[in-house]
Length: 117
Image (cartoon, rainbow, N blue to C red; front, top):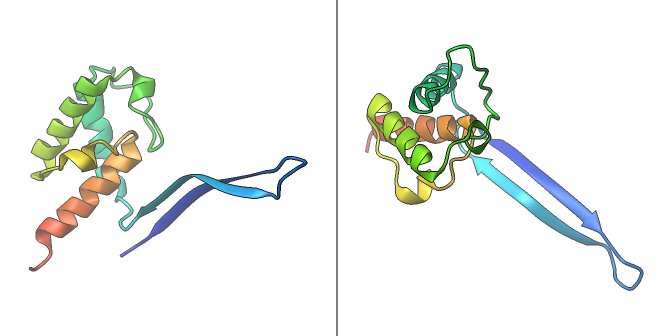
């Protein structure tokens, strides 16, 4: 099992207070997706959003940057479920905003599905 940690920390203070630390984003994913999974996600996103085959998608590409609205995102998730034979719970699908996040979630769900009970 691999782990990845990504965080952005902001430090700030004013004349009357002590420095404060705020974490604007902290994400822990237990599984890092394989390149093949990322590529399949890119292919499905291209298909669902009717993007030309030459359009460049990276793991950091945000669905919203491609013009996807919430309905498009639901359709992307449905395409991913069909392709990988998984079920993405509603709370999981709400946390997907990039190709990498989708691929990581898929990889985890596929591993959970194939793991002995």
